[in-house]
Length: 449
Image (cartoon, rainbow, N blue to C red; front, side, top):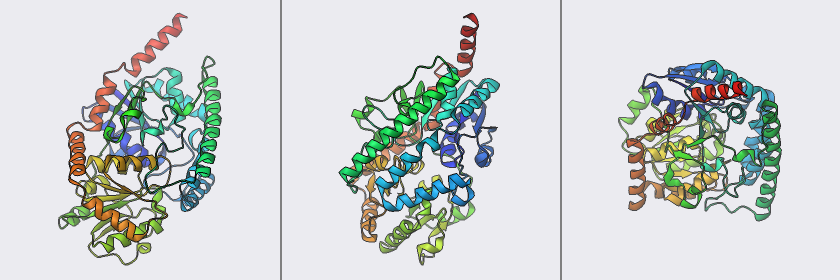
């Protein structure tokens, strides 16, 4: 059996996808990853084969730096970072305007290359990142069954009246200006129309018989795999979802880190802090979090990413501070975590039973932070507006989570441990017709016409 995994060239995307693929690898099956060169080391570390497939102009092997990107991508990143300093609406507006370039890069060429890789490998199953739109065009055009993996809050695949890029819910700490929110919705609808036009043009080039779709952002594969805990989704939204499975999380195994293990031997309670590979550039917010942790006398493990640790002030000697830390391992021992609300951070923390202080900056992080609040698994604050005192108060409260919320969070973590995300994905895909049989069937039907 062969599993093909298709991912953009970003560590934050590939890591959960590769972790799902371990269910195949551990059964002795062949796993091939199609992605760009920046993440080749991650593919090798998992023991997978690799095919080169570039799905965008940018890349990120783990810690992002605008100066290491192509000039146009570097300029885009710097614009994004500046927008996060202005606030939620400015950031979401900036991301909406950048969306065509980000998500539909050489769609016909990338779709054709995806189809070529599928023809060459004849995989039995395919896992693809939902945001790999051009690759999904290739799979859908060829009629190749696949697991469409949504890495983020489920609103990354809009349903009902939702508009891609417009948060369907906001955390209580945010009160967007109504006029600004209306302008953002108009912009997101305009971008969706343009994006859908590009999708339909590319699909028609690949398949002249293509039927135009109304909203390309709402298109999905035959089976959607949400890398997300079902407990963070309310019943009203759940009823609108396409055929799907909730995976909970894709908590990966990490190589043992001697320094981290030695540090953990002497720590009974600590807070893990990370803003991921992109938002770690916001050293001003990390510094306020560090101040709040010092204020309440907490020990911390801080992944500084692209921020210099010197920007965080005079740090206690018993803190663990590095640019990159083994997140899953540390979450497995942490008492609480502070995060930007990225999918990996949220799902891995909840899968470890760790309550959260979420400081959302962009995209689906606002909806994810609202879901964490709704479930009672943490608190959310505005990263630009929260004072040191407010951060300290939130930390105290999540470190002393109410008993009923604590029981619920522990139950979610126990359920994920009993039935991990990779196993759910394996069962879901292997119960469906294989990609190989679909290709053979499609070829036979075409030959008979």
